[in-house]
Image 1 (cartoon, rainbow, N blue to C red):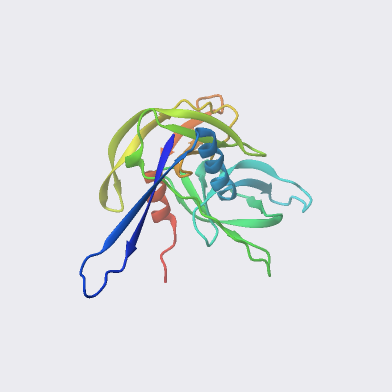
Image 2 (cartoon, rainbow, N blue to C red):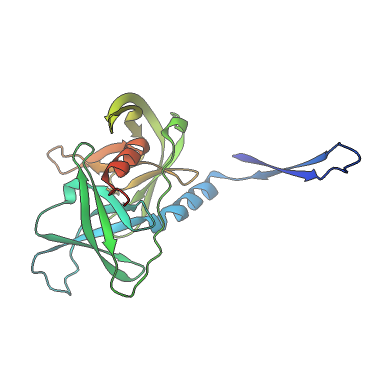
Length: 240
């Protein structure tokens, strides 16, 4: 891939001569796809967290059970994840920068099957939350390179391309929006887990895997970025 960087320098005109001189310098830098993928992964590492569930009465030394991946969507510590992991009598926690934080359920979007949690750090601890950047679906094209990121215990990637796109209209907050209602990629989901994300080479999240039962406990339905954004808007509490 070739990226053309242009630098435009404007010289302030002399007041006696109303002419401005504009000098344009053009630099060409060659960027290979490996660099873009590495940068995209680095950009999202801190925004993808692992959610563990602790049954009622579990001891403090219990490591809990992996339930799914969550996506940081605000600097206040809001976490978006698949609503299928939400169960009664389960306490949810995550390990952030070596600190165990509790996750409190804010709201569930039953239409898109998403849930929003709010992280609560221990007293006296301040965490630097880095929200993911959600990409614009309008820019997606069949054949575009994307990479899937996720897994239960560490980040595993599955590079691929967008193989199919279908648009449709949905009702969101009393308005009609056009969104990607079907998104397919060539990424192999087998090494991934619920909540794994699909990012473009700019490091923007363009979709996320959600749980879809086929009788074998498999998943694979992709939810596009616009649906994620709409869900976040509906799930976040109104500002007072």
